[in-house]
Every structure is written in structure tokens, then in C-alpha cells.
Length: 436
Ligand SMILES: NC(=O)c1ccc[n+]([C@@H]2O[C@H](COP(=O)([O-])OP(=O)(O)OC[C@H]3O[C@@H](n4cnc5c(N)ncnc54)[C@H](O)[C@@H]3O)[C@@H](O)[C@H]2O)c1
Image 1 (cartoon, protein in one colour):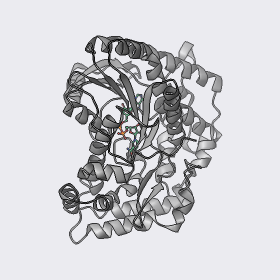
Image 2 (cartoon, rainbow, N blue to C red):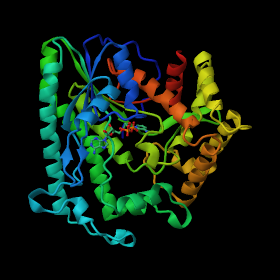
Image 3 (cartoon, rainbow, N blue to C red):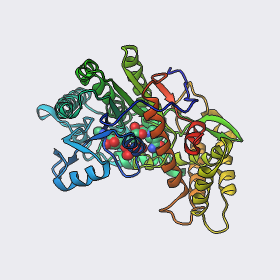
Image 4 (cartoon, rainbow, N blue to C red):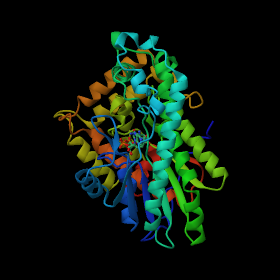
């Protein structure tokens, strides 16, 4: 089990200088976590290099970005992108004419999902083909990146990849029941996870979310050596999730979103970093707070633990930055609704005795129960309904605050990290926001 090591001090300013390079290992999306570290790197004068996961064409073939897509992505990143598709996973791999996992699942009826029996030998072949494609493309990407690294540059690789839901039609309706189902539509995450489809997800999540970090660290051994020979250093950070301390009844308490089925892969990600760390590589997983992004939208209810950040801003000292966040959040609420009412409701959920069984760090990740799912989804809906405009919500504003603050914390802590896994809880995030 990864020792629980929260970051307690705002890190000293890192020694990154103009000409040092941030390589973003994962594509940058509009409201994604990585925006924070990209911005901070640019503030420090670093050059940013990006990659793409590519796109699938109508026939399912993986392709690079078109000239137009590339121009848009580079403008968004504020840096050059290496346009060689680095899609991780194996759901569409069918080596030597064998059916890919997606093909194996073609035509499965929704009601028959638990009777599916997969050809695991074929899946193993697909997995190996996916690894060969990804690591092969990675070698080519690194060949393009190396000449872009100045002579005495430090290099920071930031791993953002997470995902791996196989793109067979059967999955989304099922996962919607696991993550968003109540009553008749409720589906036990454990029942799903123990099924053949769950097992396929597990292998796929491990591959995309965790093992890609290992492939990156392995493939850049030569880069590390060459950079070290020229007086620089290569460091690695990755975005993790392993619960987060937020204020519940006025005290910081560790809690987590349930059912976080990516959790096993996130533990594996921590293990990848721990192994690299033991070999002397500065690789750190930063376990970050729950925010709303394209990727977390599936996990409805994950955003509830974001509300008490408003209280953390006060507890850590308040001041003009905290006041500005409060003001902009208050402005997003329905007329007649107050932040106090919002926080009271969020606390009623987070502090409920119904959740006490879910606050054990050692047994994480936890599976859902019908009562927990219903309580979480109802609370989430009631809280979201307190916003005036469903497209412009308090959690959007708080998410932006969090990804900016974590980007700063991660970039500076990466210089001399204290452990291979660090938690960025609401206390340190709030202190970063208010500048204390
Ligand atoms: N949103 C949260 O609440 C939260 C909390 C803690 C940690 N994180 C982590 O932050 C990181 C960024 O996620 P985000 O929430 O900002 O969402 P996002 O959608 O902006 O980012 C997801 C990233 O995963 C990459 N990706 C997805 N599938 C891939 C595949 N098959 N191959 C290669 N790359 C793939 C995308 O390119 C993108 O870089 C993830 O590791 C995520 O687990 C998110």
C-alpha cells in the first residue's frame, strides 16, 4: 500500500529556467488538469512540447491530426506538438486477423452483458499488439523531441493519460448504470467489475492509465543519460487520484468518490513511480482533488467534494484571492441562494453517517451500494440545481482554481520531490490559491 504522504508545505520555487522543456505526455483539452502545469511552465519561461493521442477515422484507423486540428491544438497548447498518434490501449487491435476486443463484443445485447465470455488468448494478443504500437510510436516521438532539447536543458515530462473504456457499444449504457444509475437502473460496481466485461476494463485501464507511465520512463532512459551528461536533469510527474482531504464538519478528512473503477489503475500508477524512484529516477504521482473535466463528467457526484474548497480558502487565511473566488461563485447561484446554503448541503452529504464505511484509506477503492449511489446522485443534482445556469456553475469556477493551483504545486514540487506519491489536498491547494 502506498504510504499516505500529503504535501504540507508550498514548495520552494523550482530551478527551471528559460529554455528548459515541459513535455506534456497526453493531449491538452479545454478544461483539463494539464492546463495548470502548462501555464506555470510558460510563466517560468519553459518551452512546452505536446503530443496527440490521434484520432480514429470512420473506418476505425488511427490517424494523426489534420493540419487544421494540429494548428488549433498547437494554439491551445502554446507550443509545438509532435503529430504522431500516441493512443494507448488495445481495444481496436486485431493482430493477425484475430478479432479485436471491440469486434468480440459486436452485437452483444444489453441484457446479455453478464453472460459474455471473451476469448482471453485473443485479448492478450491484442494487448501485446497495442503495447507494440504504442511503444513503437513513442520511440519515433522521442526521436523528434530530442533534437528540440537545448544543450543544458532540464526536462519535465508530465503524464496526464487516463482512460481505457473499450469502445464497444455495450459499455456506455452499462457504465452509465454503474456511475449514474439509481433504483431499477442501479448496477453494482462490484458485479460489473467481477464480470468478464469488468475484467477487460481493468486490463485496459491499467494499460492506459498506469503502464503508459512505465513505458515513458523506460523509453526515456537514453534521454535521461544524455541530458545528465550535459548538466541537466529529467524529471517526471503524473496526475493521480487516491482520495482527497477536504473540510467535513470543519476538519480536514480523507474521502473519495465511489465507485472509482480507475482506482486500481491509479494504485498501479503509484507503483510505477515507486519502482522508478527506487532506481533513482525523480518520478512523482501527484494525487489531485476531484474536479470537473471532460474525463470526470462520467463520474457524476465526484464534484460534491469540491464545494468545501470555499471553506478551506477561509480556514487557510482568506484574503483578496479567497474573496474573489467567493464572489464569482456567489454570482453563479440562483437568486436567493447563498454559498452558505450550498456548503451546508454539501457537508450534509460528505458528513453523512451513510458514508462512514467509505472513508477507509486502506480498503480503497470502494464499490457502490444502492443507498450510497442514490444519496450521492440526489445530492449532486440538488447542488447543481442551485446554480443559475447549468452551463456555468460553481464547480466550473472551483475546478479552474484547482487546476491552476495544482499546476503550480506540481511544477515546483517536481524539482526536489519528497516522495514518489504526494497528495494535494484542499489545505495546500487553498494556500496556493490565496498565496500563503
Ligand atoms: N478530473 C478529476 O477529478 C481528476 C482528479 C484527479 C486526477 N485526475 C487525473 O488528471 C489527468 C488528466 O485528466 P483530466 O480529468 O484533466 O481530463 P482530460 O480529459 O482533460 O485528460 C485526459 C487525458 O488522458 C488522455 N487519454 C485518454 N485516453 C487515452 C488513450 N487511450 N491514449 C492516450 N491518452 C489518452 C488524453 O489525451 C488527456 O491527456 C488524468 O490522469 C486523471 O485521472 C483527474
